[in-house]
Length: 450
Ligand SMILES: *Cc1c(COP(=O)(O)O)cnc(C)c1O
Image (tube, rainbow, N blue to C red; front, top):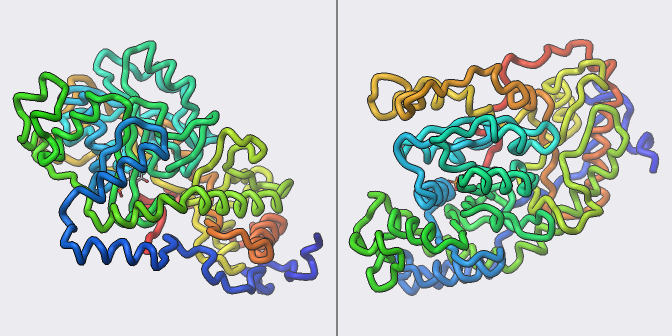
């Protein structure tokens, strides 16, 4: 398929015409809301059921069955679900939790609230997920849990991670906020660890508004999460974990984690269509990458599309890997600027800034200890210099966002692929005027939600 006729070979940034001429229409619109979502919300409103749990419990049952987990517990957001999961695993004062440095902060912040401290580990440069080889060196007698993030929808390598956790008697918390419903070796993500937590906020691949879901097969973890943030469901006759019975009805965590029923209602409708919608997203993004096969400097961040047992779920916040050495050192910053000029305004360099370089984990004294919380919560020096996790820092300079297609429309997708190819193939001319990358890339929020 020749693209030379469709696009000027001169980059738009240098005065050529833009590769993308078609309007995206609804190509990126998310969440997909229909009259069915609207009717479900109206029903909650009209029944005066906003603060109940009947719809939420139906959502929990269906979510658990869909994922293949025994218990699901609805939360007001993913951050709360993670806090419930941490507490469920018994994380408490003085404990350490191993977490990848490259993730959204809520993967690690529950440690603070519980008096524990996160210890950051490296990512694998290809998967961008926790590197199984960097876990064991960080385990101490204080380590209570490992947090695994299926980052940008790529399933983390759960088999070795679970083996390490088992060997050391440590719990595994899966943060599936980027990869709801995704598969790893034939099983849904969220079913490998001791407990999982997912954000279901509107930008995520399973959107319910503001909501989160905790899942587990472990009754004790489930009941601890109930006791922590769901006092109205913490009922003596129902709770089976003996040491939790005497406190039934008390808000043990002092927090309220209940899901809003308008969100639960949307979540129920979204869940029905999610597998089909995500399958279409995967077809579209795999098509985009197939069109870019062999282009220098650009590599897909994806699992093997021919392997039906492992997939990228709804391909949350899709990114690509960048190999500047193949483009004469063209900075990813310049690369993205040139793609934006081709007509895709959302091409950005980098992703989440690594947490071990984040002021919240270096400087902030959240609870008035008179020194950084990260250090105050530990009886050893857990500080981690930026250069101590070189791959986590370098990876931001080797990634860029790609279009997160929601529909498989070959013609438009080809225009976007042409844009990326054209920029890569013109690296030589774009190097003139390349300001280089800034010293830090990526933000605390790397992805804008409407
Ligand atoms: C979005 C997100 C969360 C937090 O979820 P909220 O619903 O926004 O509270 C946690 N972890 C990761 C990896 C996320 O992307």
